[in-house]
Image: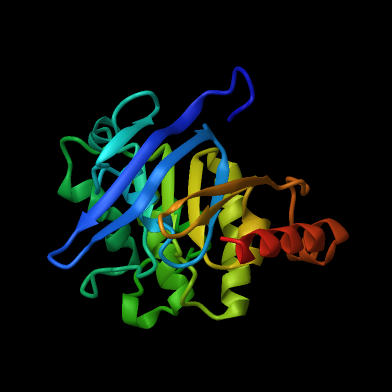
Length: 259
């Protein structure tokens, strides 16, 4: 639960999601309750199959729950989707290969001209925000994996979303690139003040990025516990060498072993 007076960006009450096949029924989420504050950076950590990605898709109105209630800024997720309040970044950047970086960021503004809300920053400024100034005319095949993922983040921000959903966006990157993007993402989040829900399988990434870590358990997918992150707001990679960070990651590992 949130502190009194704190307004939720996302609220889930007794959410259940089941998938049906000819052979069996899979319960991806069961009895999930969650509140995410406006402007919060929440990381989601848990074993494979615990419903982390499913939860993001429910919030984004890509999947409808079988039971329970989900609200985004007090309304149904569909309303938030139609207002373009939600940006989504997947593990695969999914850039159009025949469009350069700037054109890929401009795409949401072109395919939904009548409904899309434009960010205060232009697509060119968004590329600069994510550290790609000078790469506007580069095509995806000319960019590294980390640079392509930066383009996908800029594209997700083009319609000025209030919530950014990120489903293991750095999972396929090498450790050095991943660390650099972790720093960049926290900087962008603090500059824009948006709400972020970030799925990861990395204990260190969850601890470094989040203000809280939602620990989920599998079979069925459910909330195991919520772990507060008592680290400085201004973090650098050196923060990971602190005693507080080591203690936090040790706690997350202990919880993860019971999920």
